Image (cartoon, rainbow, N blue to C red):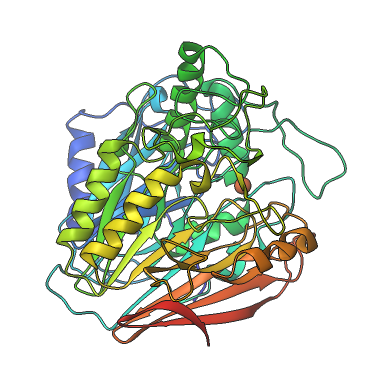
Amino acid sequence: MPATTPVLLSRRRFLAAGGAAAALLVADRLAGSWPAPARGLGYPFTLGVASGDPDPGGVVLWTRLAPAPLQPDGGMPARAVPVDWQVAADPGLARIVRGGTVLARPGLGHAVHVEVDGLDPARTYWYRFRAAGEISPVGRTRTLPAPRASPARLALAVVSCQHFEHGYYCAYRHLAGEDLDLVLHLGDYLYETPPSEGQPRRHATPAPTDLAGYRRRHAQYRTDPDLQSAHAAVPFVLAWDDHEVDNDYAGDWSERWDPPAAFRRRRAAAYRAYWEHLPLRRRSRPRGPAARLYRRLRFGDLAELAVLDTRQYRDDQPCDSNGVGRAQVVAGCRERLDPGRTLLGAGQRRWLLAGLDRSRARWNVVAQQLLMAELDMQPGRGLAHSSDGWDGYAADRGRILRFLAARRPSNPIVLGGDLHSFWVNDLKLDNHQPGAAVLASEFVGTSVSSWGPPYEPFRAHLADNPHVRFFDSRWRGYLRCVAGRGRWTTDLRVVDTVERPDAPVRTLASFVVQHGRPGPQHA
Ligand SMILES: [Fe+2]
């Protein structure tokens, strides 16, 4: 099915299709309760449409009015503009089931977040917007199954790391055509780097540091047609990593250790622009430099997804007294084992473990940004680790793994990103003790477009890391995961190149996890 069919209807047909809801809108207009329609703005839906954070009764619908997306104000006047929305039970939008009007306000960059409710569970819907006399492309979305349902199948894609300059979003072009319930985006939705030369594409604006800068950077990314088609085809569930704000930041600490008060202002601007541009619920809306992004989705009794935020609450990276504020490989670093240091923050960790303990779901998915498994990068004897991932915060990881060992939630699956490479791992408390129990299965997806790390040096580390079942950094792509009643399947999907937008896709490798037997196996 084509994901985005631009439907350009006359005002009369939009109203006719809208039925009662549209009639109500007209009545509101006649009663003079809305500002005069903005006319002559130009086409306002240049950033497409999106849906996200579904639940059994509804979903968030998103758009942003921006006739000139790279201008600081998006080309919009400094006043509120009414936006009509419709949800239909059919792709032609003949059977409208919900509709209404909201105001796109300049204070939120004329972004629109509609929290639709009253929908049926486990059902596909279509939606669109109208503003300034123009009608948006049609988006498709899907609600979650009812809490007591026993669905046979959950299909999701896992994406991360989409540096605009490094290449085209071929991954999204193919993902938009997959049969999916959800897309999980695990961070680096954009990169805050300045424009650079000699790459397939170029950032159009300087490195962002304030709200106007982050808005323009988001807007440029969202002009990409393949990203738009993926957003219009499937609901997204998103959580940020570092580049949405600043490379390798940690809580209140920027990469360059700016004064924390100044960095919190920058983080507030970045978080705000992120929320404005993505289909997130009101409960995730930032208040200054803080936003509650970690959350849980239940897919009947088949799966629960805990989505984590591994940036906002963390302590600074360990063993950085050499003056390096970003990730580095640290050898013999005792600080990384300090139980007083945290990656998740105590509140988020308690929330995660309490949820896992309560869960009756068959598959318990922990979706987060990083590689959770240990990666020893010192050949032979001795240990060396990256300071920015879970290895830099080993005590927090230990608490989670000991919980899994003690409480045995059903089939834990950890999903991650960040490394621009595929990793398929057994998660164990002790990777060097023969016969140590496999506590969970981990799948880390490669980047959508960001360059991968060098293959041979990383492959050489596998001898020291026997719990790593598979690694490859040579490909860009995504994970396609299907949870069934009896087994979980992960396909490593790769595109031939990101140098051009139409490269083909294929499956590099597939892994399965059998119900009741943790540990991925080659399919
Ligand atoms: Fe990245």
